[in-house]
Length: 85
Image (cartoon, rainbow, N blue to C red):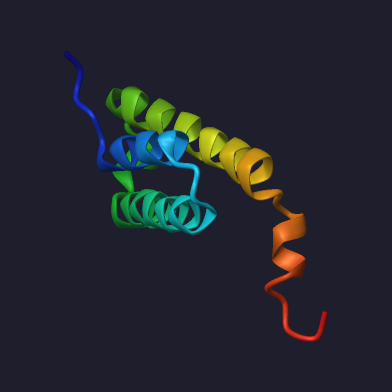
């Protein structure tokens, strides 16, 4: 079995969740983990041995975007959070 990255586990929880507040929390947690990993490890962007991890990040971000648009109605959901609208 291949290594599972923390953001993959959180993404899977988001896929199975129906509560919008929990989906949003999972989204933010996975996104935070991914961006911290990318920012903290320069070799991730340049090391060809990290292809599996890069593919995981790309796939997870695409999946999270799909969840946010399909389950949460994003970007329309942002309008309800923006002060003054």
